Amino acid sequence: MYSYQRLFDFAKQVFVSMGHTEKMADTAATVLVSADMRGVDSHGIARLKGYVRLWEVKRINSKPIFQIEHETPSTAVLNADESLGLISGPEAMKIAMIKAKSVGTGWVSVKNSNHYGIAGYHAMMALDQDMIGISMTNASPLVAPTFSKERLLGTNPISVAIPAGKQPPFVADMATTTAANGKLEILQRKNEDAPLGWVQDQEGEPTTNANGVKEGGALLPLGGDREHASHKGYILGSIVDIFSAVLSGANYGPWVPPFVSFIDPVSDPVGEGLGHFFGAMRIDAFRKADEFKDHMDTWIERFRSSTPIDENNPVQIPGDYERNMEATRSKDGIPLLDPVVQDLNELADKFKLKF
Image 1 (cartoon, rainbow, N blue to C red):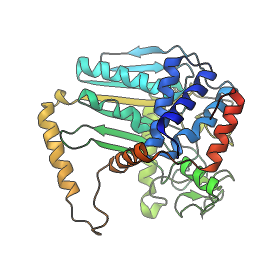
Image 2: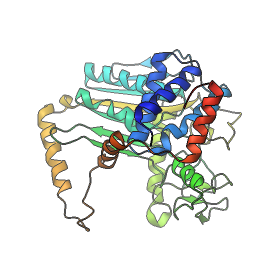
Image 3: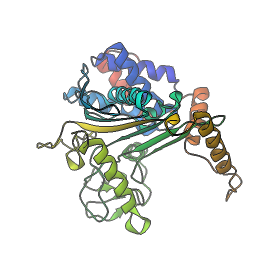
Image 4: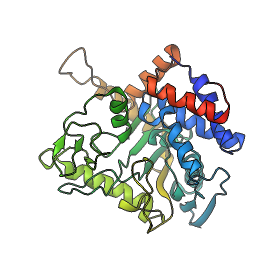
């Protein structure tokens, strides 16, 4: 087991070694390791080697200058200057919250960015301000639309964080695919098969091969197949792609610059970098914040008290699993797979650090 502080300190040292300022490295490490704490291991410290790889091929700018290219009182487009999304994401969310404080809601679309970690971190930034936070991003083209063999979309996650009163906040954080690619990577490290419905092979047939995407197949939209409503996952992923990229001027669809190493970037981009979309909604722009939070407590309490199918498996609200995992890992530490530890030791050697 590894403590949060140990992983945070190491990640921050790596980001500094890449040329980031202390402040930027602090932000990036905070976002990254928050994923491990919340049990989203596919987007945590295991991703660190991937960020270094992109930096080595000059796809990540460690000294970005953020620029708002267009704005209104409630909206903005942020050019992230090829920065880590771990840094540009929080920056954009801050802009959205500033606008929400002024006019009730704030919306920021980002271009020219990179992978931004877990969507939930950025959405949750709004909670302390009595705001609802919204976060989404497009991602590496690994997903085939319903009825397609081609990989045209990313896992394109959506997160919505909603404050409550006495109860913990409602925090939805989900990919628009049956599973995120990071979960496939975990199965690959464990040498295990993928559940049926996660992947199709290069001919479009269902497969349990965890390496199926690397071998020319594709991830599947939420639902897995048409009979289980994969068209709805396809629609959700498309909405994220359009809000994140078509709206901002980033690359979309198959032109999105990939995070994974087994896909080469396209030679004819339609935009700049990766795209994100953020929203902040001040609760008192709709009703008194205390009233809203009281009713959120009622909503949460009623759903929690729902009669379970199995008394040993009570009904949860979105965010319960991650919050419980955070409490457990704060006390017991964060487990890492051996291949991840090996990657981190290699990074330590590369940058002459200790892990």
